Length: 82
Image: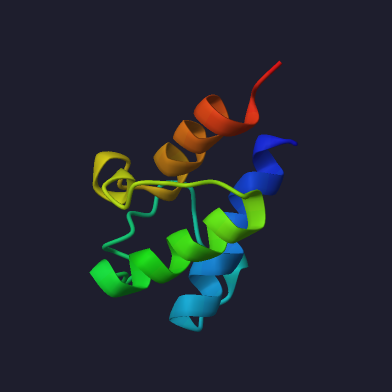
């Protein structure tokens, strides 16, 4: 999987949750600036977990508060495995 595919999926999940066009979401956008609260972060996380068959800690949204940082973390720890 490519990091761009992961990023696009995360943006799509956020876009669906927040009723916004995922193409307007930038890597530098923070989840807070996009309007996500604790509940909406959990919904987005559930979509990511289900799609990629992962089990993730919701604290990751606060440890990696931007779309880009979160994508980098997930890719480096779960998807970039040789």
